Image (cartoon, rainbow, N blue to C red; front, side, top):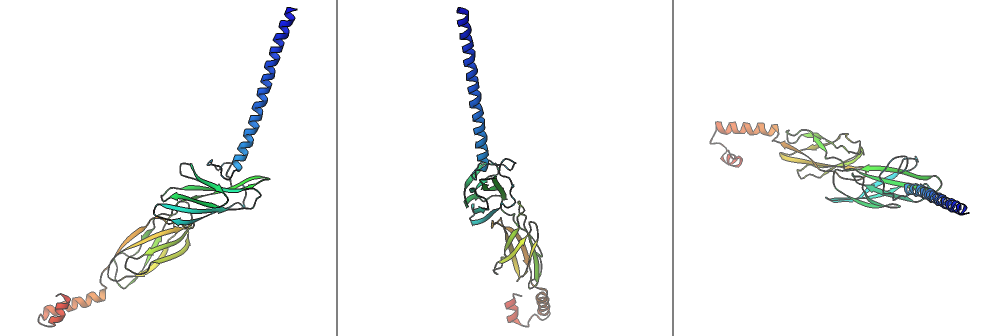
Length: 270
């Protein structure tokens, strides 16, 4: 009888341990399912702060999903963008911005604004257009400022002659260059060369100089409205040849007839 009690006690203990194990396994299974659901929901969250472009989140999985970025304002230190995108599915829409270290620096639902520093780094902006039936459709765009334009053309020519100058900027993200803004440095109005031009494609403009030395300054504005650094190019335009010829001829006459035209000699400094 004692053995039977001990046996029952041992059996009951084993049964309790098995029950506890089953309960723990059920709890673990429920937790795993909940985690999987949370992961799935997180990938569909428009403000998801995970930098990724894999099959799990932030993918180009709907061809009708799109993103639109335009500069709202720019200073010497900051650029503020307005972000918007597609709204063709039944869920919420939103966006997130990541810095070069893949840190989330801004996010929100629907369209909105964000500010990044003026630098030469590349930032990635995601737009998520959710569908309650199929899952999220996502798209992203990399943004950075266009490079300072390189400038080429005649830099030691004749005053009064029209010359053609070339301006070339490379956008690190491959965005088109919308405009080049050119200051000739001689007091004449600035010139806007309107594109679009492909990244690395040369734009041209003509200019006629008066005598002097000048510095051309040019900036590129990309398709989002971001303005890059300034490129410069120095030109020197001496007197034109016709004027030089007449001046030399007069000087020879004055040397041959030193007492002639004293007032003219004084005005010319000879």
